[in-house]
Amino acid sequence: MLAFIKRNLLLFFRNRAGVFFSVLGALIAFVLYLVFLKKNMTGLWPISHPEKLLDPWLIGGTLTITAVTTTQDGLARMIVDRENGNLSDYLLTEASYLRIQFGYLASAVIIGTIMQLLMFGAMSGAFALLDHVVIPWQLTGKIIALALFSSVVWTSFNLLILSFVSRVTTMSGIATIVGTAAGFFAGVYMPIGAVPSGAQALMKMTPFPYNAAAYRQILLQQPLATTFTGKQEAARASFEKMLGVRIDVNGLLSSSHTYLILIGFTLGVSILIFLLARFSRKAALARV
Image 1 (cartoon, rainbow, N blue to C red):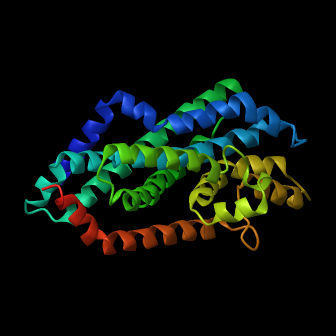
Image 2 (image 1 turned 90 degrees about the horizontal axis):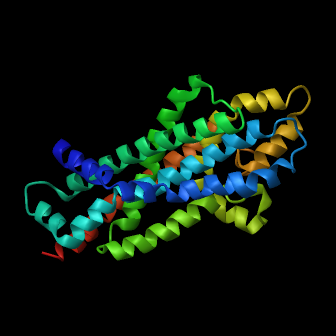
């Protein structure tokens, strides 16, 4: 199993073009923020040094996009193996289908975690140079833990989507759709509070805004406390609601409720993967 996971990791990271395109959606969101969104959003908040709030806000959403796209690309090896018949060969050995799937899943989780941390380092460094906004190093442990957790969430999601895909061209189309949707549903291209109520309801039915909110609550804890002092609780709540720092579901959700929703989503998807394993296994064996 370890050799299988190592093989998947080496194949992913040796493909430099593939590594770049796996974070292209996140890079596009980052560039759009620097070129367009930042200036427009700064004018909406009459506070001193709004970049101290907006830069970490952008990092949280972009890391969510990174978690989605890189774990999906990490699972691309499963589709390649399925199309060229390697997966069928693996299934003819003593290894069970679930064990093989776990190998692909573990590889994708590792890839997603590494790529999120690399993006976090790159964006933190860029904002430190451009805006003099420094992310406290004390948050590193929490960011690593959340990056790992996010990778598990989105690997399970992508594994469910790709369980019945047998061609790389089909997977590429799905990746384009999911990568584009991630930027919108995570509230990066447009804050969740700035879209119509119907669109907000749709966004809240997915795990995207909750994952972004989990990151933002960590990154913005200190800046929010510094910016909104004294009797500014209402202004802070309005900011958190508008920018999706906390999701409004019959009231602003606490951090624990946000994580519970993500855990519940992951468990539900995992159950579906287990129940559908027999059918996806037949799809893989169909190429024997």
